[in-house]
Image 1 (tube, rainbow, N blue to C red):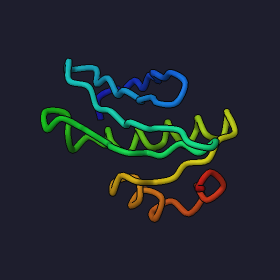
Image 2: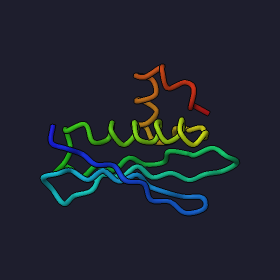
Image 3: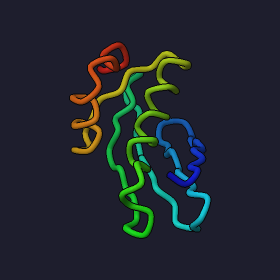
Image 4: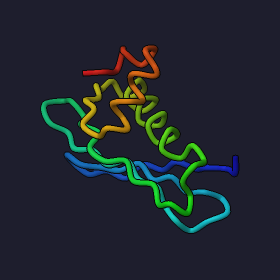
Length: 96
């Protein structure tokens, strides 16, 4: 897989993780909103031009790592994130 860099962009109650793929200008996104200390993973969006490279999975992994580091819980609204949590029972510690 080509290198993927994840960055976080947030304000008071919303944010996004962006996936930047080394060989392309397209950006994958995982968007979230926060309510009552829980971050709701709402949408995972990966343009087809960078699809099939594990970009969506890397976005969810970044959110899980961030939750562990910054002590928040994740509620999955996005169907991709729901499926990712089912595949990774070891993430139960950050699931709301």
